[in-house]
Image (cartoon, rainbow, N blue to C red; front, top):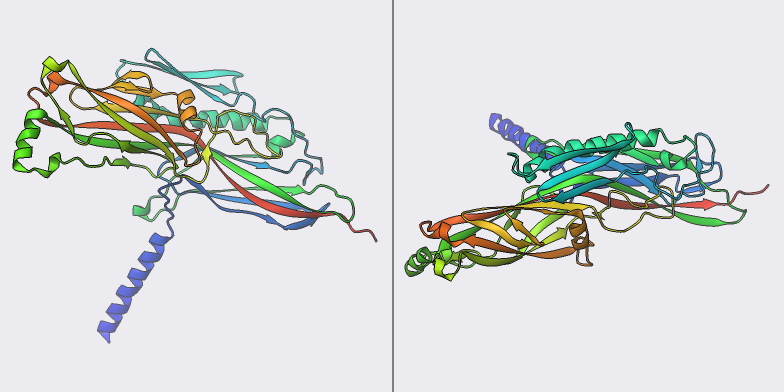
Length: 410
């Protein structure tokens, strides 16, 4: 009997552990996900309160900042509290809400419009000042987007209360990611709107599609390690049949679950470097990488013509920028998106052209890597590492339909 009790107790522990772990949602291909977008009631007539309910959860690997939810497709509806008609401006609800980035001659500036000060606020980076560009961006990006979001949120709250667009904006400063190792789910956020449908003539029954767009700032980090041998070492290992010198596909570790990821599709692995400087000071290798959109949505411009409440959100892909860093004996980018250095900045204008995501959601780009031969004369084996940090604003859409019927006449 005692043995049965011990077995039953162990079974309960095992089952409860499985349930707890199963409650933590993790998605390697997404940052935020919409767990619910619903409306109640689904059939309404003039004067009814229609509630739109949006539930969002972070299922990715990093913190989402400046989370914003907007409703589209409710032009002609009415505010449930005041009864005032929802009329929409022809410009964005939060003017000058965009982020501006500039990288020139090693100097980097990032600026946003601070509504509390009525002016642009900028942070700057100077190459060679003791901090790498990737470290600077990694340390400041979350804080910077939070400041931007706070300014935009405050500006929205100060808009004329009769401006319907302000009533359709919802902000959340951050949503933290899940920690499955601690059985901790990602942070969730709920937004809701209560509106009244348009007044229709008697007998009309019209379906109104309503879209909730959730946008947020996110980061993706990835790294690839490429084995490298000088030619003499390669020959020695070739004679002994060492499998380490066999050509193999490159594997990029995307260290955080995220909707934008990097993959390597072409290039030598390992690198075989001829250390004979009579052939020239540098040996070159060509690689092809791809920005891949694995998520449910698309990158979004930081500023655009999205007007909450209008017929629909804009669909232009946009705000993505990245930093790539290379490390290894004598390694540098000799020509990667037109840049030469050990650290390059992939600007938003370049990345936007890359990530006008094609139908297959992939955006390839090539990089030529240079290796200083003199560094490999006495260096038989090593590793060349390439690290990518990607920063972007991303959106996901969900749609519901409300059937509006004209009033009955008695």
